Every structure is written in structure tokens, then in C-alpha cells.
Image (cartoon, rainbow, N blue to C red; front, side):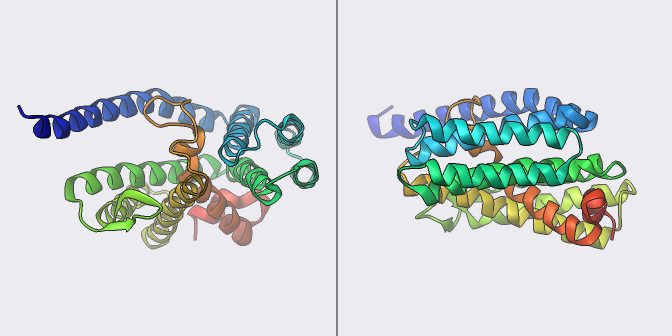
Length: 282
């Protein structure tokens, strides 16, 4: 084998190893996430808060502000304090705490203030949306499963369609590996999830297809947004917390966008107590 032939073979072997690592990590983490989502209550709130804290710290690392301890501590403290209110079903108090945390982070940041505040807002939105969707006692778990499965299906479908079909790049300047074929494959996979939920009797086919389509698009845009932020600051991965997946931001970027969209839509349709129902039942 010549040197020119060895390089593509090495890249292919590395790609297979990365895929195996990603699959093994997903097989461990996905059941845990589903079990905690099913349990709901303070367990789900705690998981959402821990994830939000991780997202915030990784964002600070990307924008180069993580060494400012008072910025880190103030944001983490606000997210932790809001967890106590959310776990007690005091949604309004939690939102007040998060607003105060946003103000504190912005005031305490000596540089890149807008980027730092945006990171806290991103983490806080992820935390609040996660809890609001699950807060619905009747449809919270069903709505969470719809969101999770749509995001995972979009990711898996996009990966295999992109690798198997290839073709024109989606946005090469921001994410050079993503293709239009991958985006369409991920979108199609999300519709399969919607059809499955409809067949199981969890809602009407038309509305579920529309919800899943919107969630898939939001998920893919969330992925591109995080890639754009990393590209802006010259960072490849947000971290190395999850084997084969990088950091929390790398893994949860699409889920955050889908959760926030779902929470907004559910709130507009059914209010605080019926966010899950507002997403699933039309």
C-alpha cells in the first residue's frame, strides 16, 4: 500500500472507531436520560440544571471567559438557585432568579460581555424549557420523548445520509462536514418518528408531522448555530466530556433548540400547565 493509499484508509479506520465510540456512549446515556425523563420531578429538574451548568461553563470556555471566576460562580449560582424553585413548581420565581442571574453575569463580565450574557441566556433557556415541557403531568413525558426521538433521529438520519450519499455541502464555511443530503435525511427520519407516535395513538398524524418537522429543522439549525459560535472563536470541540461526541454543547445543541421551540409553542397554545399537551395534541 502506498503512502497515498494509506492516508484514506487510516481516516476510514478512525471514522469507524469514532462511530463505535459514539454508539456505545449513546447506548449508555440514552436509557439513563429516558429513565430520568420518565421519573420527572426533582430528578429531571436536577438533570436539566446540571446540563445547563455544563453548557454555561463550556460556552465560557469557548469565548475565552472561563478564567473569570466571578462570572462562572454567579452564573452557576443562579442556575442552581433556579433549580430549587423549579423543583418546587415555582416557575415564576425561577424566571426571576434567571433574569437576575443574566444581569449579574453581564455586569460582572470585564470583556466579551454580550457573548457571556448570551451563553447564560442559552443555558437558562435550556434549563427552563426542559422543565416546562416535563411539567405537564398528562403529556410531559410523551412530549419529551417526541422531542428526544426527533432530535436523535435527525442526528442519526443526517449522519448516515450525509456519509452514504454525500453531495453539496449545506454551509461549508460554518460546518464543512454537513451536506444537504444529510439535512434531508435527518428531516425524513424525524417524520418517521412522528408517524410512529401517531400509529401509537399519541396524537393526530398531521399535527405530529408538522411538530416533528419544525423540531427537526430547529435541531439542525441549533447544531449549525453552535458550529458558527465555535468557528467564530476557532474552537473545534466544546469539550471532551462525552466519548465520541465532544462536550455537552456538541451533543445538546440541537436538543436545546428543539426544546426551546417546543416550550414556546406549547406555552402559546396551552399555558404553563399544558406545554406538553400543547405540543402533542392539536
